[in-house]
Image 1 (cartoon, rainbow, N blue to C red):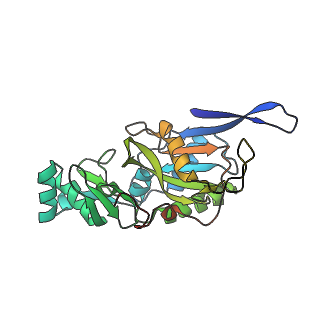
Image 2 (cartoon, rainbow, N blue to C red; image 1 turned 180 degrees about the horizontal axis):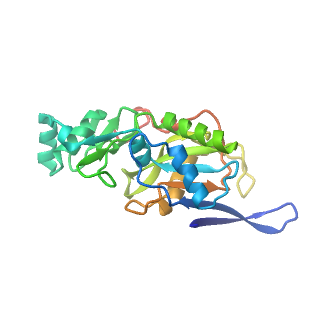
Image 3 (tube, rainbow, N blue to C red; image 1 turned 45 degrees about the vertical axis):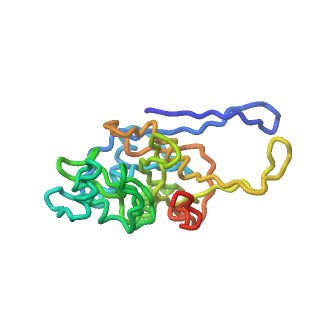
Length: 267
């Protein structure tokens, strides 16, 4: 069983320093997901095979790729008709024209098409190529993002809780780049049973000052924590259980993360 530990020393009631542990547990026995597969069944089977005990409060971080595959969000290259606009963008940048066409069809707006193809998807996410990927996809096929990732997360959560009789949370993650930093990281595109944010307003800092504002995107934090185990190539770890993270729950979803156009400094 692979584990990633982050230790934070905290002080208990007796003044003794004890470690607080947040662990990330990889589920590495999940097979290649096919359209129509039940992710709940595959996850529970993997848990049984690896002899992992599920605890109340565990957060299941699930790679969007297997959610898309289970929901048949796959497109064969032979089925795609490339438009004139897609050809122009592809030729200008040396892109795959089919990839461009799919990105356009999954978007409501093209934000930039010079050197990159940054789009706003129907779900409101702003990302490269509408989040469409060929990696870990069947030959000559493309994987689209889940249509409604928050609903997908809720469905998986309900299934897991029904079978385990435990209170659980689910985060669906995807690997994306950032406009102000190089390199890609895992971010959350769907969640259920957990608030998108954690609020520190009202807490005191080390010097006793009361925080007037401090909002943490906790589901992005959890997605990023799971990424070293998930990887971005052929690691075969599409699900990671996060344990020991004290999260806030509520009705917020991943759509609440997206800045409005008025707040977006990059458009």
